[in-house]
Length: 440
Image (cartoon, rainbow, N blue to C red; front, side, top):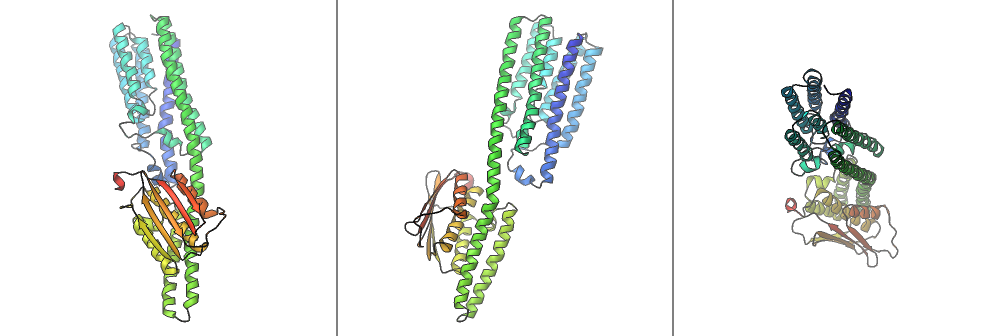
């Protein structure tokens, strides 16, 4: 039987790995429950590559496998420490259980293999057998790496679930998780040094192993720093987008709807005495547009796309918007597109639709325009959207709520927008487009 210090080290390694495995499985399960209770499951699903298979069952299976691992440890340490067959059989069981647990965790944690390597160093006496088993275990650690496996397979990442929480909570979760990983590696390093010094190991072997594990620890720290930086950027972007999105959606919809209603009512006032039947038709249209505007505001609050884009493709939605504006006002709108098929990603279509909607609204409300030209031109990796009117223009333009949101929408797609009020008013937006087969 090995000395008490060896056993204490291994018990500590088992405890650390038990905490790590249970943290991943329980954390994933609890976070999924929070996501479901927050009613954002569909939005979350769209941001991840894969979902865990029955997360509650993963907890049960992991606990069972860890129980078998502990039982194997007890058999090897206290009952058959000198029986080579029992030792090799339990080591094989440990290795298989570790691989299965890593698979259940979708390769988000592979530190449990350090426990297997620690036992191999302790019990394997033949030089060839020791290095062969260690080589297999080390290769397993390298292969069972999330970054490597996720290249070819869709896996869920614990980082996706950590990003669900606020910035401060993310820091605590990342700190706790990375601390467990680092402590596991540190204990393994100390254990290896102790075992090698007390058996047949040499100083050179210790130094070599120490350098390898130190490099692995440095890589882990670098990855941790990159993850923290990514978490900060993601949090900042998420806050900005969420803060501006609702204001932008509601402003665009209300502004567009109220402008149409105001212009339509003005027309009704003008012809109510001379053409009562046409006035009635005009009021019916205004009533319908008002109801559609209310519905779209509700949909905006519920984080949905514009109602027109939910029912129609982008080109048809633009045509419908133009027809409604022309019917309710005295404005003539001319639409032209050099792009044969206006089909893009949802966020790109939303931006194009909203920019046109806001530009038309501003042209009628502020520019008093009677004619507006909308032109979409395709370029290399981008489209150029131009909205020009014959309104009063403006020599010194002051950014209002609507123009600010036009700029924000285009910037979110890494595009640019220019305004020119010298001859009427012109909005020119350059929007990078992710051209692909799915949009052909």
